Length: 320
Image 1 (tube, rainbow, N blue to C red):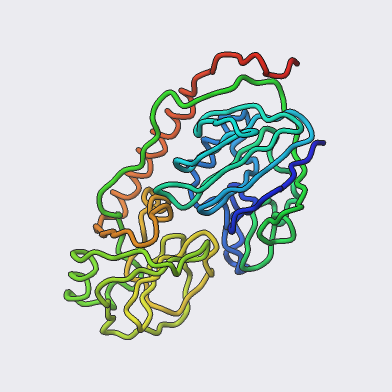
Image 2: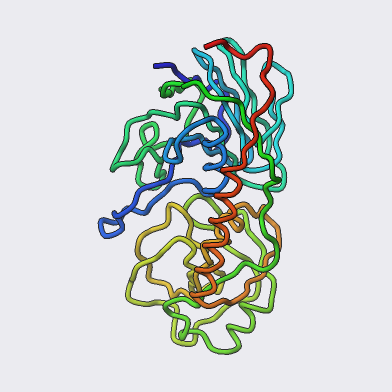
């Protein structure tokens, strides 16, 4: 088994996979990648299974070395990537050889990036997943952010070609689609008008648990305290401050603030990737429409994953 060495670490570098399922009743939310599509594409580019664990980073990646030849791919958004100072492209796979240093710089126009490595990260599974849940200290490496000096075990790199995207990957634009939430009736027509017609800005108060929005104050005429009930990824809570809070991958499983709406699954990663200070707007859709949008998105993702293109063989590729 080979090892990945962390030589430099961005501020939010963690191990992530598809996350945990079936544990909400025990108070454990799923965690997993903030941008699932980007992670899945990265895994496919290096010949991994969808469930294999990757590195997720926010804003800045870091520097990495390996002890045996591996394929790697960096996805999520535009970013400077070098191997021993030589530029590499994102959204395609490359070889990384022992002794070489892979450096991943600062992301542009997005927040979350992914480093997929052939064989996947084989940190111990906790509750059937390797995802780091920072709030509860589960998974990854001791449930924490990665740091300089960490050594992560890797699975076997099997023989496979280097791959690249044939079709450009782009996220949809326009308003963020939402479905009315379980406490939608706590908000009157004026509150809904402000929520759907006025812009909000993504604030610096954001992490893997939630992100706070600035904009017109949204008031619940029925009060801002409820008997705690379940939350889902994308739940939009409104506390007494009137500032909406969008719950993300490491959300608490229950909450006592009324939830005006839920971000449609198709747009949740796009919202997570929206940079701090950017303006967003919301658009209300029905549950049926949200489901149709997600089905269409999944079909588009499947098309991307099945149309990856083999790259020409490099002279420095390891012989197997």
